[in-house]
Image 1: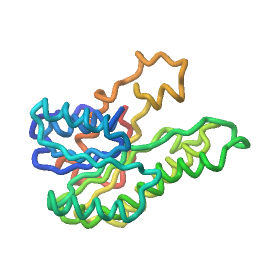
Image 2: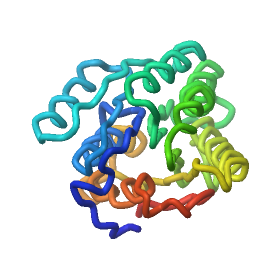
Image 3: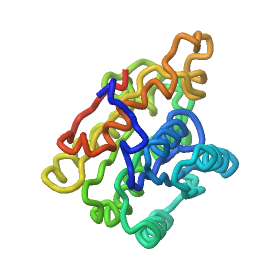
Amino acid sequence: MHNYPISSTSLAGKIILVTGAGDGIGKQAALTYAAAGATVILLGRTVKKLEAVYDLIVAAGGPEPAIVPLDMKGATRSHYQAMCSTISEQFGRLDGLLQNASILGVLSPFEHIDLDSWNDIMQVNVTAQFVMTQALMPALKKAEQASIVFTSSGVGRKGKAFWGPYAVSKFATEGLAQVMADEYAGTNIRVNVINPGATRTAMRSKAYPAEDASKLKTPTDLMPLYVYLMSDDAIAVNGQSLNAQ
């Protein structure tokens, strides 16, 4: 799956929503999904970044994407329910959901964790993803085969000093995915998790400012697994927590 061959028809005809689509791994996933034939719904909080991704997809000849500007820190259940209705009306279904958006917060000793920061991280990385995914279930159920992919981290499998709320949020992500995968086993919906690993992104540089980023994998390097899990070749894959590297 790490060497999965990506072609212009790997995801032909699929409708896939990508959160955090304006930058980093989310941006690259959106571009790659579109190049593989999918119609991508770009969700993020910065309109200018989403428009830039939109323009790149159109310029490359990909299916025209849709843009959903939304701040997951402040969005409510009604926002996500309205989004689901719009997707169902415009596209008829949702074939894929990549829950990629996350915030890092500030790395600090446990005793110095700020409650507001804790709440913000839990809101974006856990609660908003739960509420959004729940709201999108009607559109996902309309797909012949639907794939939900959550994004975890190495610190979401083994706790690491000073990673506090971010690590805890990723443990929660792993748990949510396991619950859903077990619950929807045998249906048209499969649920898996990707741990991207050390990747050349803005979030990584914030966490490791002294690191030589040139030695890290790029988001493009990770895309075979991201495409594979959204493709029909992965229909039998459910409840897995996979490393992209």
